[in-house]
Image 1: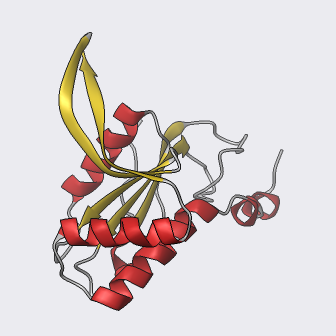
Image 2 (image 1 turned 180 degrees about the vertical axis):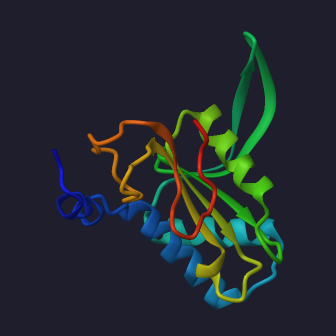
Length: 168
């Protein structure tokens, strides 16, 4: 059985360099253009910054929702980076829980596991970034650990900047 001390080491081993690259690019855009721009402008600038960094993206990707064997069209993801991370861009005073729910539904319908909610309306962009991951929920709350053998419950990993926890 793992001890808590051994278990905490997973956090360093499980760093997510792709989301770090995306956040760094978003910070560069925010630093250059400032807060409060339209979402479409932020999206365009972020796409350009990621392209300059040779990070492949898909913009306004259409994803179908399946409801009781019926395909429902019309859902668009702001960005999908490297076919791994869904990026949802907002430009609001404060992120609301509905935006988190929206990103969760995007993750489920796209079958992707990681997402970033980026609010360019914040004065400091880092205060408006939420990482969301659909992985194994860890008893020790290591946040990025999907190797935990201690509890094995599935659910949303709640990052420190994010106060929503799953109920099971």
